[in-house]
Amino acid sequence: MKEFKKNHQLYIMCIPAILFLIAFSYIPLAGIWMAFTHFNPVDGVFGSPFVGLRWFKAFFGIANDSGAQFNGMGLKAVYNTLFINFFGLIFGTIIPIMIAICFNEVKNKPFKKITQSAMFFPYFLSWIVVGVIVKAFFDDKTGMVNSLLRSLDIETIKWYATPKYWKAIVIVADIWKWCGYNSIIYLAAMSAFDASLYEAATVDGANRFQSIIYITVPLLKPTVIILTLMSIGRIFYGDFGMIYGIVGNNSLLYDEVAVIDTYVYSAMKSLGYGYTTAIGLMQSVLGLILVTVANHFAKKVNEGEGLF
Image (cartoon, rainbow, N blue to C red):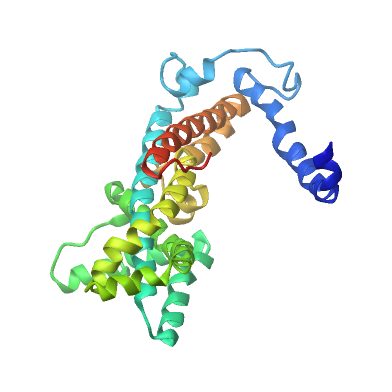
């Protein structure tokens, strides 16, 4: 009560945010019950028949429920999601750090501003526009890649009919779109580094590369760990807009790049809300488990500091 009396203005300012959180984050938690029912609008969320863990078992192929398995695409969607997010996380961390370090070492301010703006520009593009750019590269007849192959007398590839290449293409497109934006975060962290450390290293005879390896990279470690932990929490979530923006409704490529979110969208039309709610709950629970475990190990690496 003493704390409240002392800072009551601040607590009053929090009321709108708290009400928003309750209305849109806590009250909707009741809808989780749909994951354990055969939901139908007539009986409602709590009146629909209870089916227990049927939808979870069906998704992982444990139950013999051919309808709910949706042609066996559930586990394939999980694999695709983890594959795309894992490599996106690895390269989506390394490349922005490299870009940020390069920008940090550039001394020509006009050149630095121009190149930094150019790297940041893809962040503002929608996935539809990125899909058009990808098509300009990989179109079977007019694409730049096939034009190059023809000029080198190499057999062209029917990209939009060959699924095996598209995981890599999607990952590269994702990294390209976000690397400039993510590099800004690391640049902001570098701006707070103590300049005297670099001056001392120069006095001791260290060149610029050695300063980067032994000063910049270790000082970036806490930022990298925090951003990685935040990404791990969403590793079971696929980017719906990215997949549909790049691949669209191409049935030849869909199985190769379908992630959990696109699978849910497709399954919801035929299998209903109960099954798809179960998948959403599974994504959240597995993400919570992963980020909790990762946070535990991060504390050991980052001198006891983590997300929580």
